Amino acid sequence: MQMNKVNLNSFLKMGYFLNYCNPNYEIDLNTVDKSQYIQMGEDELVNIGVIKLKNSIKAEFKNNKKHVIPLSGGLDSRAILATLLEYTEVKNINTYTFGTPGSYDYEIGSMISKKIGTKHTYFPLNKYKYNMEELIDISKKFDNQTMLFHHGPIWKIVNKFKDFSLWSGCMGDIFTGTHLVNTINDLQEAKEQFLLNESFVKTINLIDCNEKEFLKLISFEKSDKSLNIYEQLHIQNTGLKSELPHVVFKGLNFKVPYLNKDWVKYILSVDDKYRKNRYIYKKILLKAFPNLFKLPTKNNFGLPLDTSPNSILIKRAIRKIRKTINKFTPIYFDPDINYLAFDEAIRNKIDLKNIVYENIMDLKQRKIVDWIDIDNIWKRHINKKANHADALIVLASLEIHLKAGKNI
Figure 1: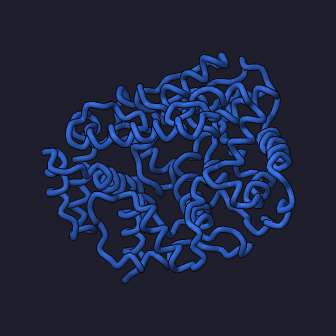
Figure 2: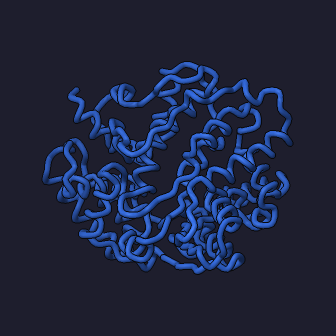
């Protein structure tokens, strides 16, 4: 099969093009040394980690600059904020949140800003109006690489903060152990598992090729053999090809401290028994900034970082029950929503509905994905016969990328 068609299919499955080579960032894993900290205990590792984390942010900091942090309900943006407060006054720091009011990201990020006293801006996506001109420009800012619609009002953000240093926690979760879940040592098997786990479109099969065709597009630059293979796939593919072009987009002065070489070397060199479920990272945050991380986090379902495991299990069980009920009768708001509830938004949010429909129809006319029954996917979704929001978002994004000049 021609490589360009395989690459096209990779976008239909993953929500980004697998053959992408990031022109702005590279990550050297060859500096990782798993033997460096093998004799150290937890307390010593935490103390070193506090220094390494703060230094990664300090290295990017410049005096006499205005700073802005997109605050979520998670850990990384809060750690950046806490560290910046050690180097500059709160009056020099702006924050903003975007997403759906009521969600963990939107509400907890807003709560943290009020607690600290930063000048805060709200971007509620339920009131944001999507338009084609901006989406085409966003496609270019994203290097025509990743799915669209999972972002804030970028024109407003760029206009408001163009003279600021924008601090992003991008890839903080990848390096600190979120994806340290598979211990597969065989590269072929790890790649196959990666494709299975990382597929964005899960409600319907959009591809017209054997998934094994994707294996040659998955980047893997062999480094220290003791590094977890699956985690390396995440760094070299999800991180460099999806997260970075999507989050660290063109047009703003981004600071990305979690890519700091010294921090990356430290956190990946720590024994994996300390890194699973971000264990050592959470200990570092509680040691460095105990007050801020005793406040709610989305990572613990709205509970503080030092919450007991039993309380978290109860919260997780409640969430699971509510999600199950919602499949039959949607009566509970889902606080885990990061952006919009696209299932209902595509049906009821007129601007989004029109843009998605117009673009999937334009894509249909191109006849480059003629194996896909686009009309049926749309009808089943709109008539609530299925939830194909993931497929519709990817198909509309593909068409917008093509209109923005993407070559397939």
